[in-house]
Image (cartoon, rainbow over all chains, first blue to last red; front, side, top):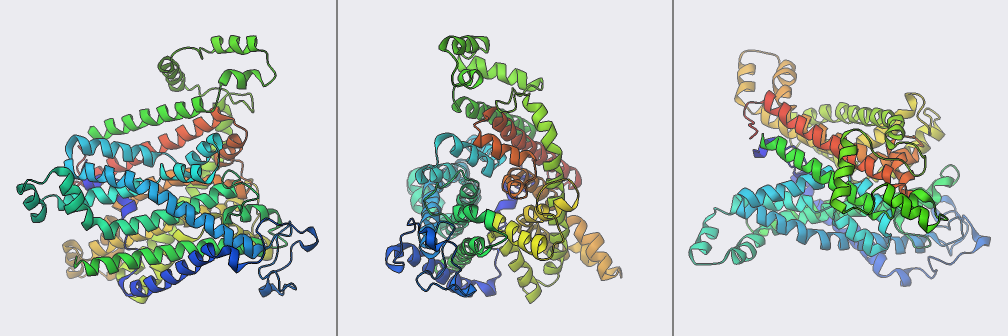
Length: 296
Length: 300
């Protein structure tokens, strides 16, 4: 199998470098700002909103948000169909989104990077096994399998993260593997080998540090991916369970009111969109910042 | 034919995983007998269906039935899974094909335009559109379209799958997610092709620029697009779950969601298996096709 014929592997790596150079510095700043705002919202949730995201008040149902002329200054983003404060639910939803993003990548990156290092460094049979694993993973439809497994074993947040992590490691493998293949014959690696370093030492001390920049981009992309998938699972009723607040679940709870109160869907929808854009811009910008400093 | 052997091995692994999914979903005998059935009846069913045999025997028997086209019986519908699927598959296939068409028709011109002037404002705008495709949550896009075209303008029906108009919004939503991949691969291929010797020769021969771009450069740039199409079509079949649920299209995606909610795992298992198999076969076909088109690619 030559590298160019590899349909299963080639297309997904080309999304690296999605933003033109001129935008990237701006991207880092804009993306970073969006991310920082959402992180602060998540961390400071109890202090930013006087309301609990769970307290229902049936006398105060479906109050419009301020930008649609909502009458209640106590509820800036209005209230949902059970009279729960929408701003508070958005804040706690941000926690779920960020936790799923970070947790999934923290679990999936070690799997993918290890497989990529092994396949790229040892080549031959080892690489064939790694490629086979990646092909099996790519053939499995992510949304479908995640839904099926979560439907079977439960939908606690830790389970959702574990299931997503078990499905989102392939891009780490593909990127790590191809970079290691380029690096393994370079002088500094040969020098380390000549000096008697073990394979493990070469992989961890010589090769891995050089992968920091590209792997950062993969990590951000996969984080965004995990966040969208959790939202989709929760939207389909098989992810985060009520009364918890997840942006996907909030959209699901409001979908019967799409004709009358579309803002109930548009607020969490836009938040998801902003978070994913922010992560993508930040990741691309960060890669550039890292590779400039490394002089690569 | 290592590529073919690998594909076969992947298929076999996928079948093993589907079987595991079915086994993990609980005791089939209890599911078949019903909750209130007596222990004796359950034991009888277990013996009848060979559920006491070693797992490997059960797997081989299941695989044998699978190869003869028997995917088991749906708990919920009480009919063979193949019959249930045969009814739903055309809808999802039509949806997938229209989504693929939409993505290709939108992305190839965008990719060409971007490649003609790399790093110009047009190029940046095109990549911006691609970035949006990646970031906008599919289900939010669906609702935005429903609000605009379904309700405010009243142009398109918002649920069902009876006429072609019902497929427009779902196909756009499903296809839009794939546009970044298509746009980037077209753009990259075109930039490479436009800088190549044969394009310079064609220009030097005095051929007009549009002819060179569309006839000489594009033909070569489209080779990798075939591969992306195969990959994306597989993703679309899997991704149709969300879309079909929102637009109430009773295809395979909707069926999968229903089956998971109803614990009807014979159906779930069959859908996972079929979608995965389609993906494996399509990517293999794309590789072979590319090798046939482009002699530089050699498959071992």
